[in-house]
Length: 305
Length: 289
Image 1 (cartoon, one colour):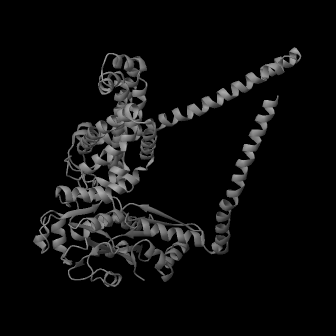
Image 2 (image 1 turned 60 degrees about the vertical axis):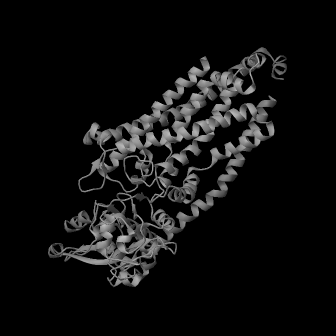
Image 3 (image 1 turned 90 degrees about the vertical axis):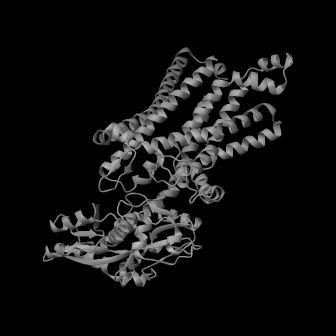
């Protein structure tokens, strides 16, 4: 259409049009660049703020005392700021959620990608999407009202708010990301691989687990890392089911995560306590950066593989 | 060319839709502030400046609500510096603020240094257990022993044979600070759970038959049972007459012989009048007047 319109016009006018178009082109380019820079700017600003406000408390408390101290009593007459219980709780909690969530999510992804009939697959996939869309406070509420009393009765412990409750909630919360990324990875496996395997006499199940899964392994690894990222950063749901006492991690004890340590005390904090909370946020931020770097490495691997 | 026209039209239409949205919400937004200055202007000539308060962090909610209501009424701003009862009392003694806020009664030596106290309200803290718990009454000493971990089983208090689950509030909470200072368990409580709101404490205690917790008296509901302490059931009356022990006064501290500024005096009169009772009750404490 456009090309047909240009042809009959005098040469100069066409030239003008081209200039105008170039200008619009540049303007749009500039605008989009600006929008992009806003995102980058936000990340830089938050990073800078966390570092600037997180460092002073670490310097005052001492890095070793802060990271490896076993006692947290931020408002006591003689305050102690040791976050080892929080770090270990975050690591154990995430590991537990991965241990339960990954096999479940992974097998579900294999089923959906390879075995399920289209109708069933549609229904199940929308259920998974719905699971991803549930706000974390709802997970927390259900956990608090159903899971916590359930654990108390089932295991005959005095109180159900525990690391176990948090692990179970997190395991469910990370399912959607694991399932979705795993499905994408499994579907990216070239059809020829599977056909060759079937042609050689392997059964479908053998083909999926011996051919498709190994071929998709870096994508599946990326799914796991994504799940780790989601689990370690979760706050609200965990806060509602884990009891928040700064104990060393134990499956049936009330525990406090890195995220909940910041969230639960920030509202009334002041002075060194508040600075220490920023330092916790900084530690958490470093964890997340590490996980992101791992994710990137896996995704790169999956592209090359 | 056609494309350009279409583009321009699209942009125009989008803008008109957007501006329609804007014009809908705009009047609603401007109405509210417009009303406030008009109201303020009517009374403003008599009072000007601001009132500064300094002290107890536990009083944040009640002073915040009162300050806001007063500001809306007169246009005088009320500032609040949450530094803690001790520094609030010191600040008013040194003339660094108009009214000091303290969540404990003044000590004798503080009174001797020329400070006077006016009780604004009482903060009653209810000790709550699950309705299924057979225990109805505990002494202050028993409560302290339970929270410091000396008593760990309900059977030691005459209840069922079950481990006591201690529910408390997060560090820095005014209710926790009040409870621990009244029971003498500061920094010594062996909490099983540290929750971040009164509502969470009540929900948790309502679910666990072996739990004990504490919460602001005003927010206690039927889902939990408030224990009598030393034989006195908590209620507005028993808090007010002082027979219910787990309570503390919210005190306004002023300096004897130093006249308050007109605005500060007016604010003081306003918050100690019956007019402010509803706001004080709304902040979860029992008004003294």
